[in-house]
Image (cartoon, rainbow, N blue to C red; front, side, top):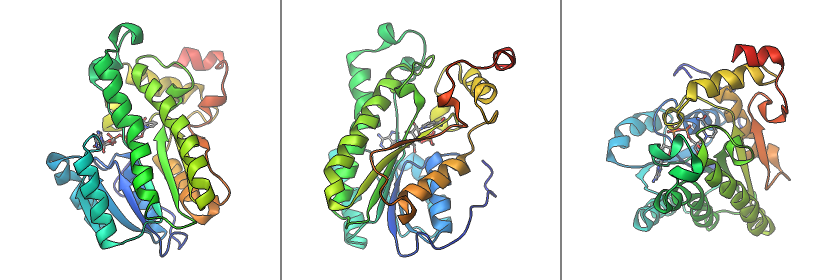
Length: 274
Ligand SMILES: NC(=O)c1ccc[n+]([C@@H]2O[C@H](COP(=O)([O-])OP(=O)(O)OC[C@H]3O[C@@H](n4cnc5c(N)ncnc54)[C@H](O)[C@@H]3O)[C@@H](O)[C@H]2O)c1
């Protein structure tokens, strides 16, 4: 997505403060979401994973007037403690959370799932890509009043097998189940929790998947909309789920993938074109 992409302006998020976890660069899905929320008046805080990433994230965050920009490695309790303390110290309260984080070893994103998934890779993938949402949601909820809202990002590889997605698909299944359990726990407190299942988008994370090019071209030709997934569509869905427009919606996995997930058998022409 180009840096010049524009997002519909308004005041749907005016007076709301939220934490964005998962911007790595301008192609990150979390960055499209952040820009859309800012265009609707939100005040934003950002985390970045480490010092190397700070160089990329800080200028982006500053360009949307971020009030808090703090390091946070979700696998490190002390780092999570410090990041959430920074938010609590500055704001005291939080209206929304965007969790857009996943990681696995590149060696696990190719070939045979059953042969290539070691105990360590399985645990580490689950930790970063699924447990981190449970942990962040728990911490964020302590600062939320009724009306609070959280989202995470997932992918169809949780529901169906996708070549080379492997252990990440298993982690996404855990993430979606976690979303439902968190929604159930926080619902009585008026806090909504949802997942967006995005189609393939060219980001750093997507670059790690073997046969990514095939994934993009097949999605484009087989999906009802016959196009790539637009990060602006994902950002629009995030705005709906995080604003009061999404009232009464919780525990949902909302697909933003050109309709790819509804296709049982692609058209012959799509198979020839892919
Ligand atoms: N790009 C796609 O095609 C696609 C499709 C559906 C879902 N998703 C999901 O969207 C989310 C965002 O990915 P993206 O595609 O924008 O790629 P991205 O690489 O821009 O974002 C991934 C983020 O995870 C962060 N991260 C990794 N390990 C971390 C750790 N230990 N602590 C804190 N942060 C850590 C990275 O720093 C990065 O900011 C991921 O959950 C991904 O699985 C992506």
